[in-house]
Image (cartoon, rainbow, N blue to C red; front, top):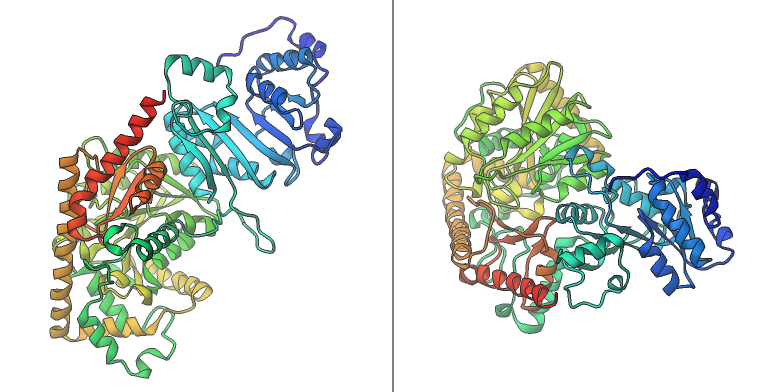
Length: 634
């Protein structure tokens, strides 16, 4: 809103200053003295002309309210209204509150309202949004334990961004709707309307609303900028599915949350050939400590597993990791600095953010899929160059083939375009490119899915490709946590540097990895007949997985359900703005899926093919039903 020039503004503010707080920072920790009572204190940031806060203050005289408005010409109306009404439980602050912790002590507030905040639509201004992660952290720091933030907006894109930030901060959502005044729910926030809200209602515009709170505060532990949820989101949903199975039977429940390959009876699939090798191990094969970087036989075998028949031309080094997660962790730890950004697609595996928070990095995203249904190379380019304006190096993580959570595989032609983007990097800028290939051996023909590997070695000298490989998935040894990170360096010096830094990081975190799976993989690659048996058995399950994915894809097409482009892998994703709402409704029908910031994730690896035929229709029906309810209740 444009701020109008008001004649004699300072004079009019002075004339209506009975409830004005002139030096709010000086009152940090002493706001109860201002009100002269011990009643709970609520803050509205961006109060506009004050309609919302005034209405609440009149209806709730046993609560104290602080109206914060940075635009003095607008805030004048709050002062005039408050003085005219003589409300003793309202105070006004005419300044921008960039960091609440400068104004309030930890735990001083009982609630915060954010109504129709500036959306700051340009991506480079995201940090200015009130619902940006660090801003939310500051607000939650000054709230009492269990106190909530309420957020309203007409801007759908801002709401989607905010829901992603709220989820990333590990907050508990108490109330949420995409249509506050059309929703049948009796949310208290319906009673109190802002000036903006009144205009939007008259035009029929939906109002997005969410009420959320921090899940808990630390007693001895330190949060250190991390989101610490009470429980893992995916495991929590899966546990609810298991509980319903116990109650109504597994034939009445679809558990599409599990990121592991399951048979049609719901049992975990483990390759028989791998089980046979495991059963043959002697104590010396698993009991001794393995070397930090892995046993030598494993390091050679895992390069063959990761590269297939391709033989790299450059210098390669291997470091064993506990699954693919370890490769992500060690790459971020060694090839970025605290405070720097790490770039991933906007559809991403949630632990990427967890790793970044744990290491004091910030996760940035680019738009993954373009309008033609392919990799959005142009947005990747934009974000790479934007970030490198403020930092000298950048870690980029590309999860392919069979991307989690969409199932999309980057094509060779798209890889060449990525190479061309990096070839344009300014002099002195470095990029570490982590190819998270966790699902490569379930993505299709084992040689064809590796046809992008030569392009990695065509990258310019200021790009270091690293391949993250999950042996846990390839050899169905999930709980044994076995993986590797493999560099494709252009010089022996860079490869040696990789060896040294990853060894130090491993020693400082997990020390060394499980010896047993390393021995199993080494034995498989040392015995051609055994390897052929393993490959043949895995191929059967890979074909089953591909059939499942294509079955869901066909069902979605028939049901008119939009999904993101799918090629192969464990997961399919459905874009939608109200994933949490849809997921909650589906759970009532015995369907358990994972809501993400931008949609729903379905694990086709865990759902029988017969259920995948009808699942898209059920999801679409649920979405349509919720949309109809919003329309009927308007």
